[in-house]
Image 1 (cartoon, rainbow, N blue to C red):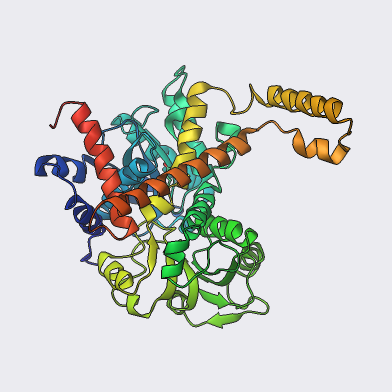
Image 2: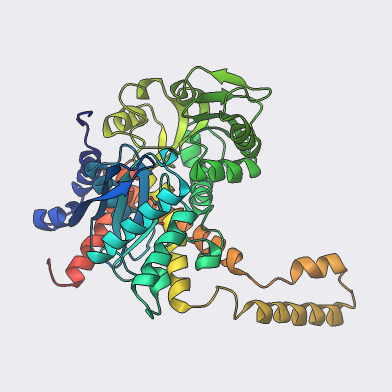
Amino acid sequence: MSVQTHSFFGDVLRHVDRAAAFTKHPPGLLDQIKQCNSVYHFRFPLRTGNGNVEVISAWRAEHSHHKLPVKGGIRYAPDVNEDEVKALAALMTYKCAIVNVPFGGGKGGIRIDPSKYSREQMERLTRRYTHELAKKNFIGPGIDVPAPDYGTGEKEMAWIVDTYIALNPGQLDASACVTGKPVSQGGIQGRREATGRGLYYALKEAASHADDMQRIGLSTGIDGKTIVVQGLGNVGYHAAKFCREDGARIIAIAEREGAIFNPSGLNEEEVFQHRRATGSILDFPESKNLSSTSEALELECDVLLPAALENQITEDNAPRIRARILLEGANGPTTPEAEEILLAKGVLIIPDVYANAGGVTVSYFEWLKNLSHVRFGRMGKRYDEAEDRRLLHAIEVATGKMFSEAERNSLIHGADELDLVNSGLEETMAVAYQEILETRRRIDGIEDLRTAAFYNALEKIARSYSELGIFP
Ligand code: GLU
């Protein structure tokens, strides 16, 4: 068994401490905010194919209860451990505060390699995990609401909600016990692509500021920017898609088995299909194989988008990173030591706690949908369309000019669920970015976006404690 030396939770604390130094909160309050409130580590048996029993290790960490429920994904990976789960739960607390999503932070994980188990075993594992959480009150619409993370997706969320409903018959809000569900099981349109779309909005915001772009030698806008993506999972795939559709060029994509490079641009969907068919990203037509994932990270590019796991950009490779913007899709991809090196080189870091918050933002919308028991847009869509029609008719009468069928179709549009989700997501990302910039402008000594974002989170969390009268 490998000995863990580097602490991810310790890294998060260092980011928080850097921001905390600019606040005036008493040490006791800061300590309460920083510590992880509860960690539940449990084990349960799983029968393996050959009749043996394997003991599975699992966790759920609830970092902060200053707002309820706590919220955060569940990760299935062979190296899940307590330090990681605590760090990820802490990041959720700050992330939610930064984008004004009214939740505390949580995270769960099961230490397994999902590729080694059958679908049936995965279902049993997931249902058992849910049972264990329910037994200890670590899941519920107003308590703790999991979601997908690395190694999990809609399928697992469907098993979780089904198990929870079975354990809580008649509980009207039971479907709000987990988000990221399939739409047919109470999920919401746009959740699957939400983290990637949020990353795109984050980049769009950052790239719209001429002064910041000028400082790093880039023009404004996404159009024409070159991007290197690490990880072609849900987050990397969708972030690449939305950026490419807005004119960016994806010049390299890295995955576990290696990386591919094509300076004229890659299409993420074609690469995804190639990987699915051949089992590898390598040997993609008209592109060059790179010897390793790390070679891709060090390519000259405008935007580097790590969208895999934590601890990818460290003091070892940071000196060789040649990107101008680091857009953090994964949670914790950059260590504090690496960050110092990158900031000294003038790299604009759009930090994970803000950049990848699109997922939890749309999870919040899904939770609201479940609690209100009605699809967004259901009440207003036809009404808005009728209003558009009346307006067009009035214009026709006043001007004597008739609109063509095509013009009518494009002008008459009531918002459906996906329109509203995307609009809410864009608004959330834009407002949070403005708040971060405002802090960077206002607080003397804060120059980077991560410290500004953590500062904002600390201010908001501290406010909820003082409103409770717990701290002055
Ligand atoms: N696992 C995602 C994250 O790290 C989403 C969490 C959620 O939707 O609750 O932000």
